[in-house]
Each structure stands twice: as structure tokens, then as C-alpha cells.
Length: 114
Length: 110
Image (tube, rainbow over all chains, first blue to last red; front, side, top):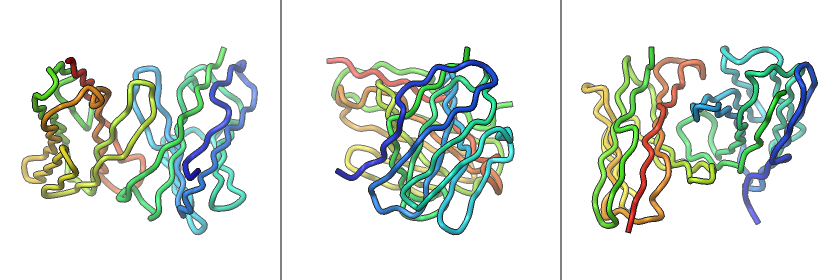
């Protein structure tokens, strides 16, 4: 099966903890992305990464960092979570770099920070 | 203020009716996409359409840069079209200038 997989589906944690979300794509794509969708359903792109370049949305706090072992994996680490980090985090991939290409999304990881 | 405005915020259609969704933007456009979010939350990329008209099945996207708008036309709506339609626009260089609209929630009833 070729798709974008995310784990966990749901995570509850306390303020100040570190969390890490996994994303794997089996589509053979070169570029992967992380998005955040807040409680008002507003989406924001956070990062994109391929084997050559990391592009960061400069409004993303520095406690967020992407981690990649190979082009099929892009994990998201949050160093010290805060209440406003509660959201759904969506991973996506595309064949070409940049936002011009069709992106394929994972099911999302819902984070709740208490 | 909101860089990308979508209208209407919500829409209810009877199956078979057509829909026209609008997305307006405030400054010059580098690129734009239309996305569809299913009721359970999964997201699908529909069109990359920075200018002109593109069609895929019953969906047609038209972007008119001079008028600072993009539209998504859904013809012969089906119940399975229900969900949220989002436009996203790159209004400058860098992802901090990649803005999503708040979406149009579409409900198609029998």
C-alpha cells in the first residue's frame, strides 16, 4: 500500500514535555511537509524538506524541529510543548519540491496539551 | 488582517446542484492551491492553479490574477462532495507568506 502514514493518531501531554510525531511516506516522493491545523481549523504550513533543502516557515517557534533519516521519513519534534501547540499536525509529501505540486496527506496526529 | 478571504463560509446544496466557491487575496500572487478536507479530517490536494482555468472531472478552478480571485466550480454536486474546501495562496516568498483561507463548508443533501 502506498500512502502517507502518521503515528500516533492522538497524543495527550503536559506543558513543558517533549513530544515527537512520526511520518512515513511510501509514495517514492522527494519532498515532505508538516502542517498545523488549529482549533479554528486554520491551516499553516510549518516546514518542507527534501534531501537537499529544509524550508522553514519563519513564524514557527523554535521549539519545533523536523527530523529526517531518509527521504521517506520526516518526524516532527516539539521540545517543550505549550498549550497553544494543541492542534492537529498533518504530514504530506509530493514528488516535486515547493507548493506547486499535488500533495498527499497523512491522517494527522492530534495533540492535546494540558 | 486576513490575507485570504473565502466565501461563502458555508453552503448547503441539494444533490445535483452546482456550486461556486470564491477565494480573494489581498496582494500579488505567486501560487495558489485548492484543497478538500473530508468530514473526518483527511486532506486532499485538488488543484495547483496560479492563473487561468483547470478542470478535473466535475471540478473547475479559475484564477484571475488581475481581479485577485480564484474560484472553484463544482458541477452536479454529489453527497460525497460534502466537506470543507480550502484555498491556499503564496503571496510572497517563503512559507510565512503561504496563507490558507478559513474554508467553505459544503453540505450536499439528497
